[in-house]
Amino acid sequence: MTGNIINTGGPYCDQRKFAYKEKGTDTWVDVGYEQGMFGKGLFDFDLAELKPNRTYEFKAMAHNSKGWSEGYALTFSTLAGGISNKGDVNGDGKITVEDIIKTINIALYKDNPTGVELASADVNGDGQVTVRDVVQIVNIVLESERGAL
Ligand SMILES: [Ca+2]
Ligand SMILES: [Ca+2]
Image 1 (cartoon, rainbow, N blue to C red):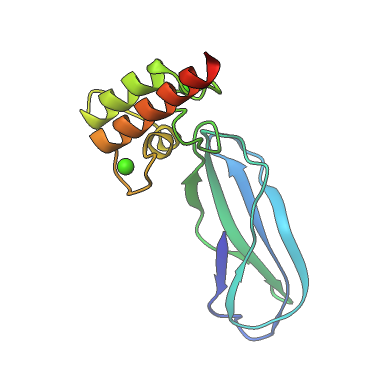
Image 2: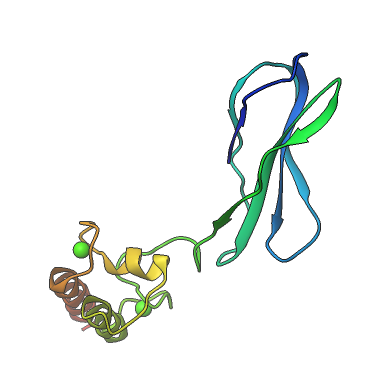
């Protein structure tokens, strides 16, 4: 999250923070609270421990002797499942023929994948899901089956 103090309205700001909430809820949670002497400029804060596959709203807030002022609320979404795992497209912890089928469907636009599924299916990391990724996942599956024999 990045906020920008554009105009302090006179005195320096002495406090600044962000507030965020899950979209559709009413309770703003304060994070990244700082005290000090702040003029104009950017400030930011890395938010951790968000739930996957949710939409959040956040706003930047700054305080001076005239009180709190806040920016427009912006929204962002978290990805489903969190971290991608190359080749494990369906996220069950194993790379199997099901992941091959899912990758083929993504490559053929027969599947409407989430961001994490897309990232997991893009095994060679070229930013798109194509037959090349399918081939790599097939090789991973074949190798793991060979190793199991
Ligand atoms: Ca899998
Ligand atoms: Ca790719």
